[in-house]
Image (cartoon, rainbow, N blue to C red; front, top):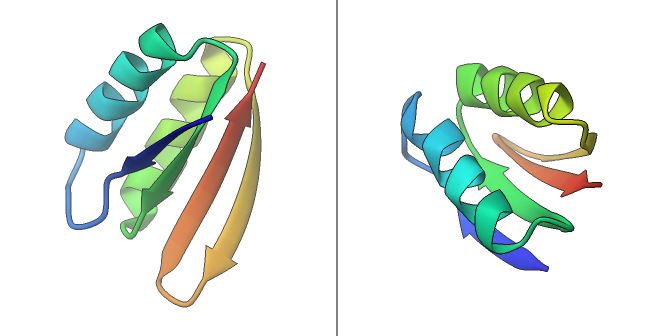
Length: 68
């Protein structure tokens, strides 16, 4: 699984990183974000493309496990 580190970035960059990663790894990715807006927007994007999203919170960061 491809891992993407989008910590410290504001939207739309985390969404664009997720989109590029899913093109390279269409079965799914793990992406880490530290911004609530990025969390919500990446989740919405992934679900709109037919992926399931599992959120794992760790302090001020979230790891999103995105799978087909």
